[in-house]
Image 1 (cartoon, rainbow, N blue to C red):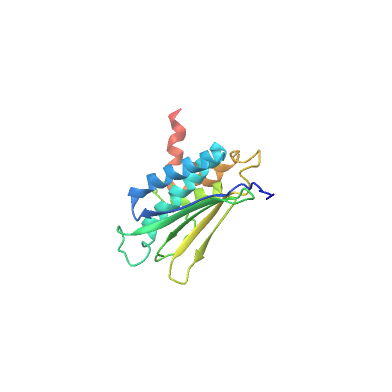
Image 2: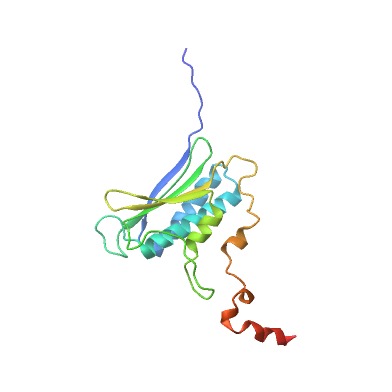
Length: 183
């Protein structure tokens, strides 16, 4: 008589995503479907999908495609996994770029530059790993344990961590006082 032990198989996926905006939606859809199907809390799924979208956008904007392809051609790699302990990790790998991924402090009127600040605010941890072939992987621990009953509870100070300072806090702009007389 053989003894069979049932074991939960971790969720994982890896996919090539076109270097450009075309494949980002497909990657988000695939991640959302897979994580939902494995019982991950909806708010954790939302955070993971937003993080994946930010990382893919950054890889396409600031990194080269993998291999010898030209920008706009070729692929970057997206991967995610829930390991046996419940830790959800998202990774995006590109062919490297002229700068190292780091959160920026954009101006109030800037149209971009907030992606890694959003990732920092949502994630439990994140970092950058270099490969000997020049590939760069940005990895994010979305949540340490997606099976924790509190997993996915929105962090109460999220908005404060990603918002720009108020106009009143920037006296050098010179137009904040103009609004005081509108009452």
